[in-house]
Length: 601
Image 1 (cartoon, one colour):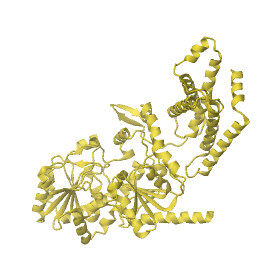
Image 2 (cartoon, one colour):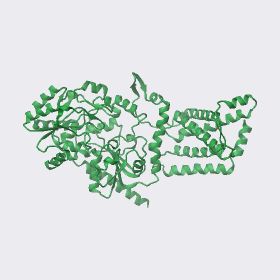
Image 3 (cartoon, helix red, strand yellow):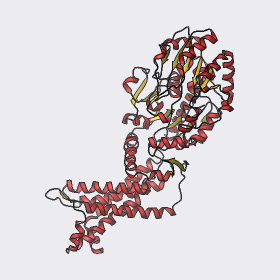
Image 4 (tube, one colour):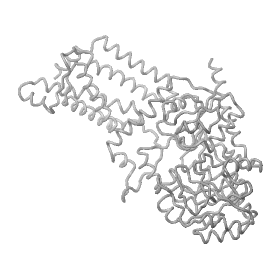
């Protein structure tokens, strides 16, 4: 065995080959050292990547470069043929099989060190893939034979190396892990996070490949371009709407700093071009162009979670403007049950905001609690308010009239808005309105106030509300209208259920009634709430009769007083200047970066 291995090494590992391998390792190490801050690569991983480069060069030298061409590609698809040949007297094949096993043991040892999140299963799958790739190259280049036995022995070597790594890593200092709920209820039994990760080998293989190809590879390739200090990338509700906090900041940034390049990621680019201002550059959300813009922008401004394959470089800022500053329902880490459903729809999804986010935007002490508890984010918070609500604090009758015309509403009528939140258990299905009779509510309001009323219904992003024939044109569906802030500006009374919208509308001094017909089902099948409803200042109805009773006692004065109680309940500190405060932060970071660049030069 030693003689066989010695002859192989003397034949293939010549001085030029060894020097090439060493140079490849040094080149890899220098790149990692140069990008260590952009890619956040620790020293141990840089060394491991360099060793892996040396190993791959030597491996392909042995398997491909040092061999002579054969007449044509050859394939040996019989499993264990080498052992049968060994029993017939071809003893050298045993040594060859052992050598093939030992050849991939270093890969199993080095790979987990080179890739920080590479566990046992991922290492083995990568080893099998590398062996399959090498065997195919051998056959197609006519420099060897594709053998199932070689594939088996290489995979066995990877398994041995990965097992040795599991033993070896006990002696390494432990890395900090992001806290996650330890246990979940799944199919009637309690499962740990580790159980879920080991529950489906095939899914994990495709997920790791999907994350690399969709997120990491495009951003790695795009990082050859430098970061533009005057470019900001915006995204709202995963590219579905030009709305919410990102829109308010985008418009304020262009108003005060028109020299900045503003990029939006949208799911439907052609549709977005009809509504976006001319100064906005639109790219398809999730495309290579989107990740190139992410990799080269100095600021990311979003209102939902980013994909966990996203990589942040030096000189970039990630600003989270969460869309539910005063939401009632528990979210993310606070909602164990909904996190389980979230994981089932997004296998292996992980919340990266505690690691990558540089700034959170809040408008209340309640919102601060959500950042700390629901996101596990302990970083800096801008306590200037939520940018989307600035318009509600600077609302004029002229603007209301202009928006009524834009939305196709009658100028002389008051506006009732029905805007329920989504239901997890109705994901992707039409959402029913239950017993609620909106025309009857309009009639009751007209009788109570003496004014004419018109109705709007608007579903949550990604939800579609039931349409009834009894509406007779009195109820306008504005679910497809992108920005809720415009609708709130023309609203005189809101009916919702478990939404964060009442905390926004209260800033305009307008009233809210909660219609919670399915309360028991909601807290059981969807989300639990952060508080008991009886401890809040909200006016609540559980059926149509109770709702009409609340309207009988409703007035604009009592609604304004209730709005003040709601703001006090959430400990709101909206300034009406949140967009400008965030723009000042963005441009302040830009100026600091310019000064750092000048000092380096």
